[in-house]
Length: 101
Image (cartoon, rainbow, N blue to C red):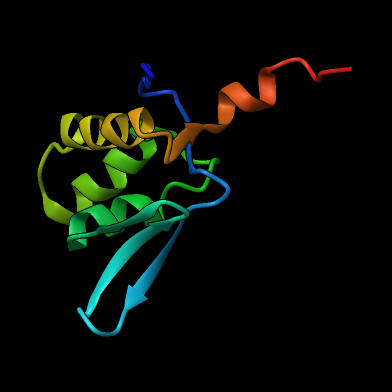
């Protein structure tokens, strides 16, 4: 599936996915019904900000201030990859879609 996130997209985790802490590996993981993805600290910080309210540009600015670098392209690329796996969706698109009857 092709996902086209932009800076104005408002990413949110898929409803069956969640970030949790794996005590065995001592790392945060993205859990979903078919599996799990081990997260590095940066990936976990990106996903922690994916609440469906913040835009990708908002997330990139927040992380850019924290790291003192322009991270927009990296944030967009990472979310694009998760979107293609259908683990992250654009909350803007789902709220503007017509309701089925």
